[in-house]
Image (cartoon, rainbow, N blue to C red; front, top):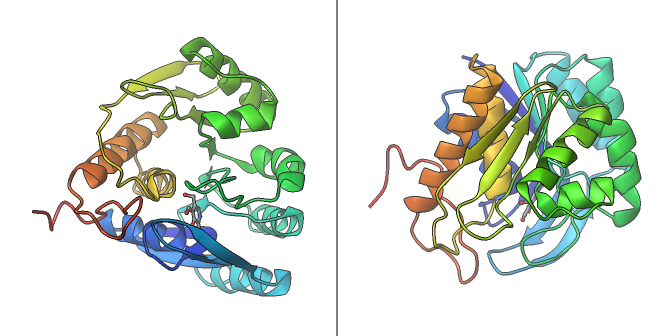
Length: 262
Ligand code: PXL
C-alpha cells in the first residue's frame, strides 16, 4: 500500500483540512498520515478561532513520520505563519521529500485568513521552490504574483510565472470564474486546459483540500501528473455531486461516494 502524508490544519467539522485529506487518502486505497500545523475551531458556516501548534511539536511530528515511514507523496495545506512555513520547508528539504503537492491555503470559504498575510513572502520564497505541484486558486495565484487574473490567458501567464518562481508544475484552478470551470495545468513546457462541469451546490467546503489530496494519492499510486490531476478533478466533482447537506452553511463533500451515496 502506498503511503501519503498531509501536513495541514485540523477542521473539527470534518469537511476540510486534515480530516478531508485523510478521508481522501483512504478513498484512494492509500495509507494516510497527518502532521497537524493548526487546530481550527470551525464549522460549515464560520471559523471561530485558530490555535497554532508549537513549532517544536510540528517538527517532532515530522521527524516521527519521516524517520520511520517514507511517504510516496506529501500534501501540504494550511501553514499559518512564517515560522510554520520555515519549519516545514526545512523538514521537506532535510528528508528530500518527493511528490510534494502544495496547496497555498490563504483564506477559508467565509473569508477568514488561514495564513497571515505577512507570511505570503515566505510562502513564495520557501515553499514554492519545494513544490512538485503548486495548486493555487485564482485569488491565491493573484496574491502570489501581485497580478490580476481575468482570463485563461492570464491563468497561463500565472502558471509560467509561478513555474519561474521554482514550482516544478503548476495547477491554477479556475473555479472562481463564472461558467464551467477550467483549470490550467503547466508542466514547464506544455499547458493542459482541463474543463469540468459546474455543479450548482453550496456543499463545497474543503474542495481545495480534497483536490490536492486526491492528486497526491494518485501520484503515490503511480499515475502520471496529467492523469493524477484529471482523475483528482473527477473525484472532487463526484464528491460534490453525491453528497447530502450536512450543517447549516457550506456542507462537506462525500469522500466515499464510490461506496455510499443516496
Ligand atoms: O479549504 C481550506 C482549508 C484548509 N485547511 C483547513 C481548513 C480549510 C477551510 O476551511 O479548515 C484546516
